[in-house]
Structure formats: C-alpha cells, structure tokens
Amino acid sequence: MSFAVDVTSAPVRDDADIERAITALGREPGGSLIVVLDTFTDAHRDLIITLAARHRLPAVYPYTPFAADGGLMTYGPDPAQMFGRTADYVDRILRGARAADLPVQQPNKFELVINLKTATALGFSVPPTLIARADHVIE
Image 1: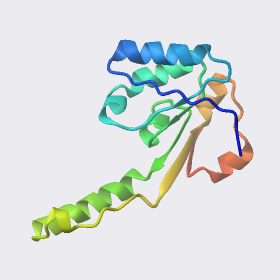
Image 2 (image 1 turned 180 degrees about the vertical axis):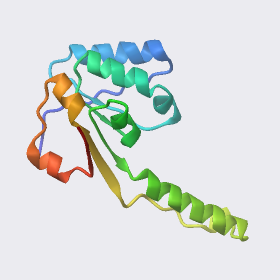
Image 3 (image 1 turned 30 degrees about the horizontal axis):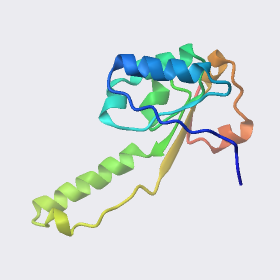
C-alpha cells in the first residue's frame, strides 16, 4: 500500500534551526509535523507548538504534555506506566540485581490525546471515529 507521502528529516540544534525547519514545512502543500521525543524537543516544547500553530501545521507529538500545552495531538507510551516500570527496576537494583541481568522492556500501552481546542483554532475537523478512539480529549 502506498500513501504517496514524502518524509523529510529535519535535525535541529537550536531555536533558529527549529524555526527554519517548521517554516519550511509550513510552505509545503499538505505539510505536517511529527515530533520525536528527546530532551531537546521536550525543552523546546513551547516553541515547537507555537511555530506549528503559526504555520497551521497539523502536528503529532510524542506524549501528553505536548497536547496539554496546546499541541494538536499526541500518541506515545503512557508515561505513568513507564515511570512505574522504572521504579520497579530501581527497586530490583537496590535489592541486588545487576542492571545487565534485567530484561529490556518496551512500552505496551500507548495513549492518544486530542486537543479539540487547538483543532478548532487551526480550522481542522477531527473525525468522530478518531475522537472515540482517544484516551483523552481536551476541549
């Protein structure tokens, strides 16, 4: 199956790079944005959300705080579950387990959060079927 979508990577290192990358995406017909989670994008969350809104880009972010801060939608691992797993690993290590002996785990619960207030401000309509699938809807 082909969706005829061109994917472009936009490595960024500072505010100016973020602005250039999002401005360029905003000029593309049908442009959109997928933000991956790392400490840099989390630290620049407000700028990324603001620029995506300014350029009217539909954007999907990696976890709930992005939607809570005005991002259109998020889809990513459930942070509460991940932190709970982290606590379990810390407990095991403090009880004497070697970190190298603990199994690598991947998230098994993902959250979809949709910010309808942002969708309305951007002039986007969110299909009711997508809203029904969301774990949280911000109105």
